[in-house]
Length: 403
Image (tube, rainbow, N blue to C red; front, side, top):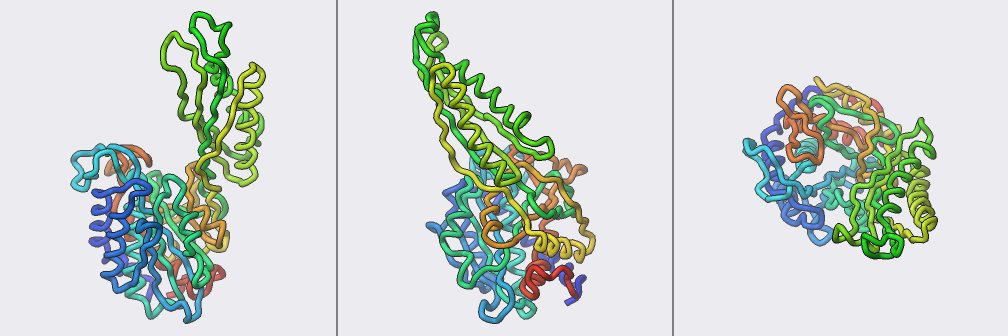
């Protein structure tokens, strides 16, 4: 098959790609509730003649294409499937979410549609597939809980997976463009909570209490010095406090104040250091005033780091795709638990441009007006399929996509 023929086959899937994406967009499910989405994926894979398997309480789907015993290099393709607790705006859209307060505002509906398109194209090209591709439809990415559970369930074994690929729709990149970079593309993403405990009392008699409110305020400000004074100016990182809660009345000094925030970093070393220092700074400041501060480390994931050889494989696939532009994006401080797959096997996570300024598709991710140019869907299928075929033939050493 020539490069142009594969391009044409991917383009011919446009109708089914849009139908899948819109069906999923209208029926979004939150992390931990993806049974309907998983069933839809399962049925679509069955219709392609595959033998999908449901995992993780029927919230995840896995399907293999090709012969695991026939040689080649086994590859995992991952697509996340959960939605966000957001009320969608944009009543004029015919595919607007039908579930109040739940929306695919991060493009996971498109990720699933692309993966289903890759499955359909690989089934058509099964005779040219020198190995096995495992499709992994993952729940609970938004809560950073799905990838680890899938790995624990054995998706990287039987046979031993040698590489992993995934893509993320990105509204900040124009449709028709693919962004690939070696190394870190997404930052680590960790949630933490700090509880500052003082001594409550009357608002008119602060000297008889130990007010945790000003202590919490000083902690919030001091945490910013972890970036401005403890992190190299040549290394990006973020510490954000997104929630402060304490007190019940204007004239009552509360017993406690809680802070909830996030740390983002592009190296494992900065991630570990910042999370440790958040707790130390909070405890030190609280202790100065006779209060206490305890830190709880919640859900999180490491940086998303693409293997150089796998990134080169994807670049080659982009360059072989007619009419597709290749860019090297700047690293983004968003997070994704695709990182756990890429810690386990060499892989690449790349950006699929979905924005369109002329059409007004510019809203950022996690926004109630988020949308995407559906013309990007065949691009994602084509690039992913080319990269998968090449990897199964030659592994990560393959950097030229042949006709």
